[in-house]
Length: 203
Image 1 (cartoon, rainbow, N blue to C red):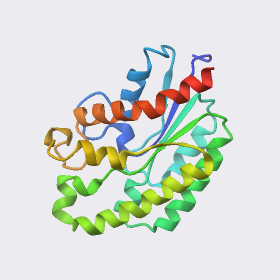
Image 2: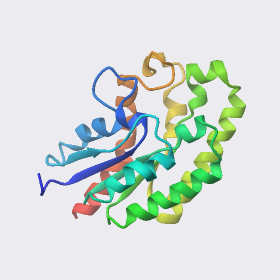
Image 3: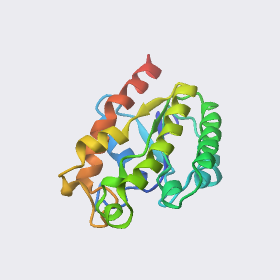
Image 4: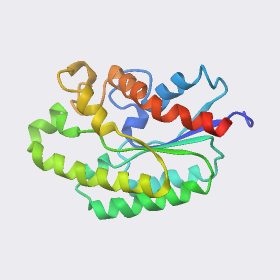
């Protein structure tokens, strides 16, 4: 296992697969899609349900910095937004996370927040325009961080707007997290942004 290339995943419940009855979250599904081209690739998944960007710094980042990955993905911010934490604090945390991870020398892909205003649960609780404005603010920070550090940006926001409307089967029973099919769709749509990073590193 020492010589196996490592895919390191950091993030929240979508990385764990909350809402799916089987198959894990998007990192597990990405791994399966990447395996035909990279059969020795191994997933080290430090994602935790309920994690905020501060939780990632305090809990996941120290573990990550002990790893020598070939690829890193970051998916964080949904819980910062849901807990109404300041977007400026999220931006500062994101900068600390990325600067620390870049010391590992692996390519990094970062996902922005999907359009959670489309979720059945959020639609019942919060006016769509209020939630959308907050998502836009958080995603502006993700985009700026990705540009500043030359990260691969996975645009889950646009993908979710294309994919989710009129597709209730892509939501889990909680009306917030993806279903197993929803995670499959996420992974397939993320793959074109992720796969080139491994090819570039191997070249």
